[in-house]
Image (cartoon, rainbow, N blue to C red; front, side, top):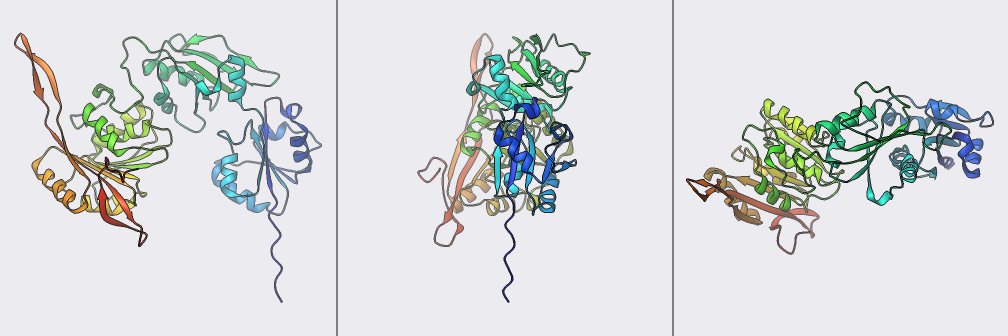
Length: 432
């Protein structure tokens, strides 16, 4: 006897709620909540529902994300409605639910960002949104540029004070700040404008449901950091092991970071390549490998200061630690080239289309790069930078040590589906 197929999984409906609760919901959202057999949400959200929503109320446990599959599975045969703040697909629970189930119905509410832009008269397309919910405040540093407008999603009532402190520390003390609380609700409030410099350290905390509006203003004497690779060398704490500014910019140019890609930075030194790779786009990721514990700690401090605290720092020697890392989209080798098997291990780890760039200033390592170029192709160049310096009463050129750079892109073997040894340089027609 053929067994009957299992009953289809009930669709999950995600309903966005505002600070105005039930009163602010359209009819479709109210109907979905009345019809649900299970109502999942935070305690604050569940408390906003009236008695006519008779479904079983289940509060999210902490931590939330790991609990999603189990809760959905436990109630798979029932009609589920999940409560979310504002737009569930904008830094909300909608993403996690979409990853777990294909039967997802989303009924959004205006987000706090939409409300904030409306209250401030800021066109949303000209605003950068940074979330600090479950994330370190240091992430904000990467978004700080003169005259930019930011909307910062707060973790709690203490976030505005953290934002003000970070702005002062990063040279943006003159920035203008406002806090918008309980947007869309009866207790909505927008604070008077203040600068980060004038933000009182002992300011009483406001409502935990808030968003911070920042109009960035750069202090005149603060170091200016641009939006492209090649930050000033002074932006980094280092002990001399630093890929200098002009070579760094050229190196990132051939590494060619794209959104969502992962970089291995081998021999991290001060972490400048990994830091600036991640600063090109919020979704770019990097792992830096550094065998010296003091330098590894310094890399973490640089990443925090420059707005990419999510940079993963692995303390250990390559190639031994490489097997533990997720597959890269690109690899940069800035140190340790003479370690036996390092270049081969990096090459083998690259998928088809991946890029490898290696820099050196020594003859021994240069010989290794010449051999790799012979075997795999790519482009071998020498980068030379000279700086004008005083020579008595005149000015002359002081030459920095030239850097030999090998850059290569690994092309896939379309006949077998595996990566081949044939490669083309970053400036060739085969590069993407």
